[in-house]
Each structure stands twice: as structure tokens, then as C-alpha cells.
Length: 153
Image 1 (cartoon, one colour):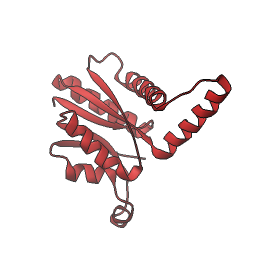
Image 2: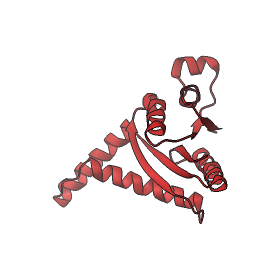
Image 3: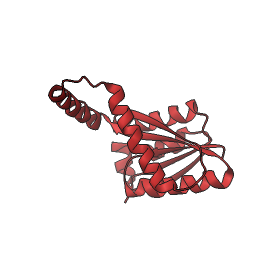
Image 4: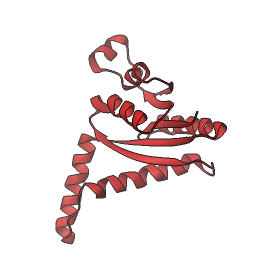
């Protein structure tokens, strides 16, 4: 693996997936790109919170404030898992709906030249996948490289 893309949110399953990605990258002298997801609802909630704080502080916050904060959260999450591993890690913050997540992962993997994608999937029945979709399944079918998945618990 030269460069892996890890699709992350803050959860135990994502922590386990990141540990696997760190191990693979360290063992192959590769590096990692981390795609930290903010869903639309979370992003809008953060915008409203910052607007309220800005009115109190008489300061105007913008999109970059939310993205920088999310990048800091992602960096702390990665450092808590990677520890002392000597890896080049690039943090990318993605904002979008849950349904667009697979497309965002595939586009990011292509943009950053990733040859391996690490993604958490949902344990769903075939009917559930057909009705609600499955990000991991879409990534596996759409990515022209290796994929590693971890089922959410």
C-alpha cells in the first residue's frame, strides 16, 4: 500500500478501522489520507452554534472555522490511535449527506491517488441495502483497488 484513504467518524468501529489502516501503512511504508465526515445536519448545527456565539462575541465566523475545528478533531482522533507511528497523515474534511458519502469517498480516493480504501459498513439485510443503500458496498463496487471494511456494531 502506497497511500490509503480512511473514511472516519468518531466511533469505536472507526477507531478499530483506523488502527488497521495505521498498521497497514506502517508495515508497507505508506501514508494515509483521512476523510473526516461531517453530515449536513451536523454542519448546519455547527453553523447555527457559531452564529449564536458570534453574535455574543461580536465576531463573524465562516465555513473555514467549522472545517478547521473538524480537522483538529480528526487530528486528535488519529493521534489517539496512531500514537508514535511514523506516518504521513493528511486530514481532509468532507461535508455532505449520508447518501452521498460513497461518492465522496471514491472522489477523494481518486483525487489523492489512493490505492487502498478503509471504510466502516453497516450490517444490513439485502433488502435494507436495496432500500437504504450501503456506503461500504458502493465503495467496494466502485473503487479500483483494495478495500478493507469493518462492520459497525
